[in-house]
Each structure stands twice: as C-alpha cells, then as structure tokens.
Length: 130
Image (cartoon, rainbow, N blue to C red; front, side, top):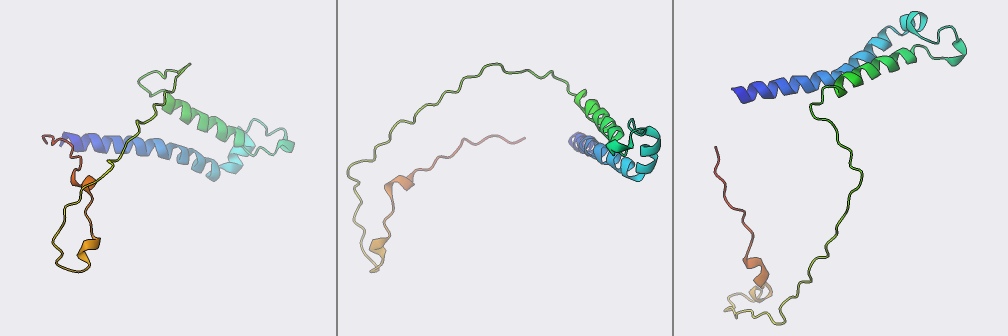
C-alpha cells in the first residue's frame, strides 16, 4: 500500500512538472493580445515585433528556476577524467575439436552437428525474492 502511494505521488509530481511549461505557454497563447499590450517590455517599440515573447521567456525561466531549486544534492563538475581502454585478451580456439560419431538414423542427420561450445551457458546465481 505504501509503495502504491509513493508511486502515485511520484507520478503526480512528474506530471505537474511537465505540465507547468504547457500551462505557461497555454496562458500566453490565450492572453497574447493582453500580454502584448500591457505586460510586454517592448510594447513601446513595435519594430521589434516582440508580441509578449519577452514575458513568455520570463515566465518559462521562472518555471525552470523553480524546478532546478528542488534538487536535493549539489551538482559536482568533473574537471579531469581519464579513459582507460583495455584490449581484450586474444582467445584461441582449440586446434582439433573431437566430435563423437553419431549413429546415423536419417540421411540428413549427419549435417546437424552440435557445437562443443554451445554445451555450457552462463546462468546467473538465483536470488531470494521478498
């Protein structure tokens, strides 16, 4: 029950964060004329053809700044990193692979030879489930 509540809470938090940008853009589109006449910084300079986009940029920046402040851990910058590439060790196939003779029951059966290398497969260790 607790896991479901946490999952629902995280879903709603991510949904609200994603919808915040859409809400700001929707508000701008619905009130574009009002914003261009009253809230635009460039309303006295019509040659810029801003039409309230400066107001939209400010609102989107506020939304982005609000989501960036919710990070709990500070971001660490990596100044120098080293990349190490290790060449794989060459694998040598055995010189002679002995394939046991199988009694031929069908004339086409001798063409289906089972590889010696396909006999072992990696199986990860079993883990206990809660």
